[in-house]
Image (cartoon, rainbow, N blue to C red; front, side, top):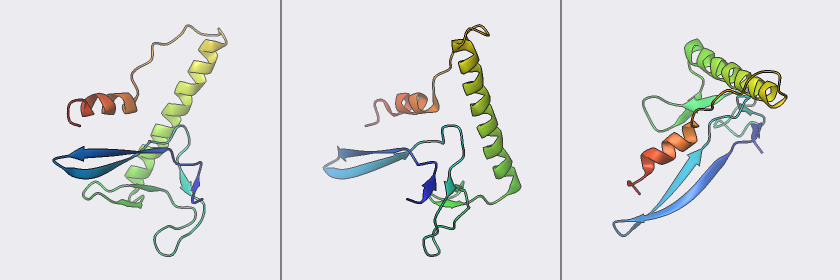
Length: 114
């Protein structure tokens, strides 16, 4: 209700050392950065983008122009990748070998930990 486009996430339950844990994995945006579309008290403000803080496990409004530029660069790179994939599928350019997604790399890092 508060994000446009929607946020993709998954929830997993784990038991380790007799304790229950929940892992909430929030996916990186697909092609367009996610913008808050509805305010919620002082927590969420309409029109803002939020990112993970570098110092704490929290989500914050984009704090600097540098981080905003990083997000814009990521969006441009993702859109270019999608464009070239469409061109390749249409046979207009040779196919480009794909690299493993961040999600797959993260899942590989988790192997053996859980």
